[in-house]
Structure formats: structure tokens, C-alpha cells
Length: 237
Image (cartoon, rainbow, N blue to C red):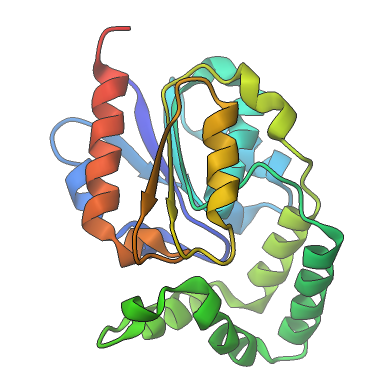
């Protein structure tokens, strides 16, 4: 039986999937929320650990860094991947400008200024409407706080070291869902369009009034899209 693996983003944990997990776990479906990004230092090691720890075919749903890890799992073992759901992510390598920003942030994390950086990042992580009258900002700060500065630094370094995976997209043949927020400032919609155009048969959905944290900002829409994707995986091919 195929195992559905939910892959959180950078410095995130199972809370990122809190609205989707109960619905996706209904019935007899095998489901696991991965934490390999919290336990290993490189994308290659994260993917290898997931392949070793979860047997059989995999349906991988990853958001942000989780999507990057999902692509690395496919690179290492395409025969194991039954489907991909890539949410708010990119196949591109970091630009020199982005590497410089991440490096500066890591310096601040190491200096004990994590909270300062995270609060400044809120306007880039969320659509403004998502923060009004909600607890999402506090939830985000608490979640990343659980990861702590060491994980933030280690995971940023792993992401900075990644290769450009766009050349391999044409080889992906499994059912693929691509989702992004129309106002995502961290992985802009053009990154998702690039994924969808590069993977044959991929289905792209751009969520209105949504930023980077789409599983929290548009939980019902994301859950519905994932259920449709899982139905496609179960259908005869």
C-alpha cells in the first residue's frame, strides 16, 4: 500500500499540516508526517533517511523545503514515488542574492536574534489578510521557536547547497499536483508555473489571497486539492 508522507517546510513541524492531517488520515490510508529535515544536515541525507524509514511506494506532499526534499527523494528513487504534491516550492537553486540573505540571517540566528528575524519575515510569509484577526503569526513564531536557531541554520545551509533540479523535471511521470499562493513572496508563482510546465501532466492551482504558508492560510482549499490528487493516484492508469 502507498504511504502518504507529508513533508513540512523549513523549521516547521507536523503543526504545518494540522488542518489536513485528520482528513487525509481518514479510512485505511497510511500517513506519516516526516521529520527527516530536523534530523539530518543535507537534502541527500534527508531523502535517503526517508527512503530507508518508510517502506514501499510513497505519495509525497511537501510544502516549501518539504517540496525540495520530495524532489530529492524522487531523484534518488523515482521507482518508489507514486505521486508528488509540490506546494509553495521551487526546483531552482538559490541565487547568489538569496544565498547572501540566508547567510546574513544565519549570522543573526547564531547571535541570538532569531525572534527579531522571524517577526520581520512575517510580512513575506503571509498574505496580509491571513494575519488579521487570527493567531497565525503567533502560531508561526511558536512553531519555528520549537525548531530553534540550530535547526534554522542547518536547514538554511542545506537549502543553500541544493542544485538546480529543473533539468530533471521532464523525467517525472507520476501524477503531480503543484499549488502556490498568488501573493507568495518567498517562492513566487512563477516557480510553481515552472514546475507545472516542466512535469508532464502536472496540475497547477494558484490560490487567491494567499501567501507562502498556504496549508494554514487556505486550509480547506489545500485539503480539497490533496484529496483530488490522492483520488488520481488511486484511479487505474
